[in-house]
Amino acid sequence: MPNDPSDRAGHGGGANGASALRVHPIDMIVAAVVIVICALLYWRTFSFDEVPSSLAQNVQPATFPRLVLICTMLFALVLPFEHHRKLPRGIDLDAERSEALPGITWATMAALLLFVAALPTLGALPALVLIALLLPLLWGERRWMVLIPYVLIFPISVLFLFAEVLEVTFPRGLTGGIFY
Image 1 (cartoon, helix red, strand yellow):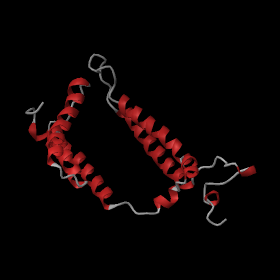
Image 2: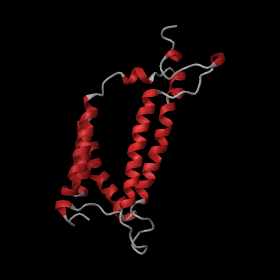
Image 3: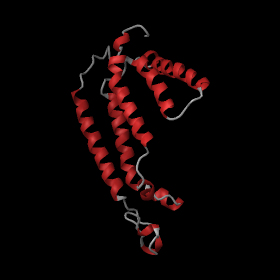
Image 4: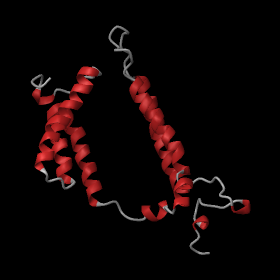
């Protein structure tokens, strides 16, 4: 059959019609790129300064980034085999990927990059308030009775969790110590 999903690249069938465990070639490349980037960033963590044990707050500065990078690499190892779970359910990843990303995706990425760039200058609370307001508006949210409490409660909750509970310091920016 010309449209048989098992004939597509990376979707081969084995003897007696059983699906062979093959990797998806495009996903293999993506996974390899992600793993190389993570490995380089992991190597970079060895240049982080060591903090004296009395000031380390139970973990060294490099510990959390290393854990995130290890988890990301583990997820990347699974990526080339994702099609084995999707294809039997009638989901063809190649067909879904042939469509261009919607403009809202690019706008969201740009907004988040601007947030990261503005964070040191504005400070954590103003930057979080701005992104909490901008993203829902960008995505089409117009219910102000929902949006206003979210814009007020979410940034304060995030700051409280990280600054007070986890004792993580954020850039104070232009606001200095006014808010926290």
